[in-house]
Length: 219
Image (tube, rainbow, N blue to C red; front, side):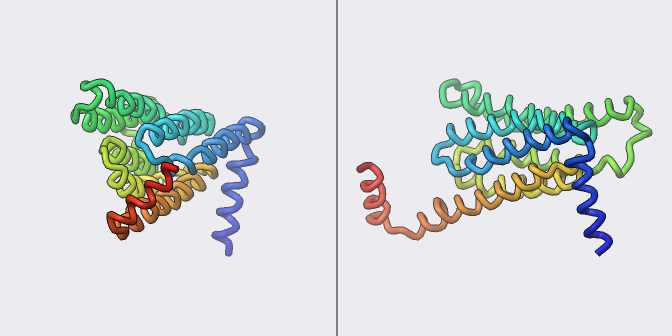
């Protein structure tokens, strides 16, 4: 019971303890939460990426507003926006479709996250401690997301994004980002809905049933 009370106090402090600025930060996060639910309900990769880029812009603002403890997440979400611009371009430009972008963005995630952490401790590597390890949840989650969003199959993307969202949900709980916790939970739920709708149910239909359902959508 004492543990539950301390958890409630922790998040109450995170939401109300930082005054108007803290409330605004959480407000931006809740706006991002609303957008996030619609990301994986899109039927095309282009629409999915557009919704994802809008969402990442809002999360970038949210995490930087929360303070130094979540600067790594702000940095990662900004990198996500650049990644999605490249992914949008690959439908028209050959350079954007090259496989090399996967390791490039993975390397950028790790390098700039490391720079962000080191700058926060005055570039003194001796100040690194296990207390900084929580950043790995967001970094690894972003690494998985790079692969998930670079694949051309929406089905494979959904399967990869599910663990990515779970890792981000853990990170959000640690840095007291209430909307991010809810968002990642909703996104995981949204992915599961999409897996059922587009992967499991569609795979059970016969070719005749699929053609019949498609003809009704055309009408």
